[in-house]
Image (cartoon, rainbow, N blue to C red):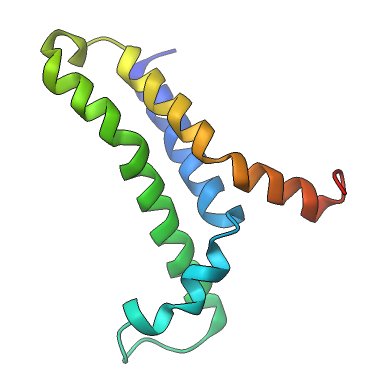
Length: 109
């Protein structure tokens, strides 16, 4: 796979995690801390922004080890390896979202 395709996989995992993460309700419950007062109090807006916060947080959390690796090994910047590490870490961080999706769909009890 090309580097850009692996990056697209990472972005897809971030979106998946943002939608199905069990932390969406927690982030939405604390929306009074992060939401500006002019924002509509519509639950769909709160869910969308909570999902966006979780997606961005996952991208950053999974990307930190890759950024450290690329800092200490500058030759790895052009290699596809760091992107695969980023994808693997994103997949690991998506595990609670996968479990929640299985519970919602009724596959796991």
